[in-house]
Amino acid sequence: MEMSAATNAAYIVTVVFLFVSTIIQGVEATIGINYGTVANNLPPPAQVARFLLESTIINRVKIFDADPEILQAFAHTGIAITVTVSNDQIPLLTNLSFSQQWVKTNISPHVPAANIVRIAVGNEVLSTANKLLITTLVPAMRTLHAALAGESLDRRIKVSTPHSLSILSSSSPPSAGKFKEGYDTHVLIPLLGFLRATGSAFMINPYPFFGCSSETLDYALFRPNPGVLDENSKLTYTNMLDGQLDAVFSAMEVLGFSDVEIVIAETGWPSKGDPEQVGVDVESASEFNGKLLRHVTSGVGTPLMPNRTFETFIFALFNEDLKPGPTCERNFGLFQADMKPVYNIGILRRTVPVAAADNHRSLFGLICVVFVYFCLL
Image (cartoon, rainbow, N blue to C red; front, top):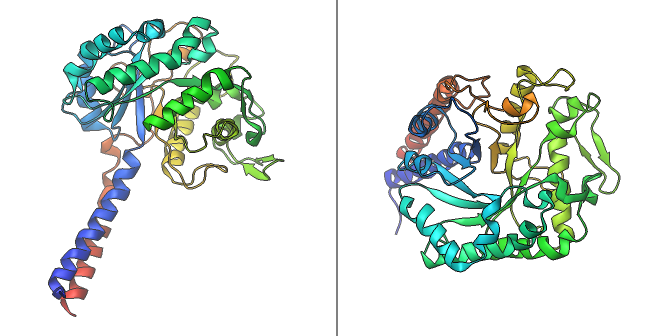
């Protein structure tokens, strides 16, 4: 049956609208934030959830526990939530009864109102050198997944665990990336097999800030630089983050798991630090995080992983005044405790209207042209 000109026009207009909407939503869909709470001056979770929903383009959040007040605050917002099981609970999770009770207590009461999409089992466990935690990590993940399945939540909620770059024995050049011997066969092969089987992502915490020096600051901050040639692959790297991600990809490829998705679970840059630290100021932090946001959503990907976007969680939402360690540890936040921006990287909705209006006008014009064209056929 042939469609009328008007029907045909309406169909094409709908397709164009959905296509453009998908592009616009696709950028927002990949940017998340780490919501840490090691502070004594933060606003209540309900206020934080409302702020993220109404005032920013962020629609993913990762928390470092399963705080019921936070989960209740994010109910009905649609914001995707990654919750975390603390490292000390990992051995306990290998017991199915404990995992079942953990899910019934911390997850089931909050879904589907809270959009919990992932559980991170511990954080940087392999870097702790704690044999008990390391040997029980994968069994704990499997048992927790079984507990989710028992509640019919295994398709909604994925299980993974974040790693630091210290799991690599080699990262330079990126094509020679390898996991540390011992961890590769005894932990990472079973872990990656679990992630593949359950459709979960490999979570990594790459921080160019911690890997740079005064000589490589431009390379770390996405600034113009001569680039770094990987002699093995003959690919040139123009920023440190790409090199770090590709080193992880190469290590996964060595073990036969290049198909497992990579998620950037943490990365960021402090706005304040100690005098001896390089590039620690508001301008550098704004530059790194702003360029990071554009880079991971651009679809350019990396030299070894071209044409990709990366689900990315910026560290962190707030400056956290009770965090131990050097000054920089308390100054990774995009926002102060009163929710005033430390700097603006373009995630505030009020910064978007001019560009958004131009986009909407262009889209409206395109729809009008298409509609008139088909009406005149």
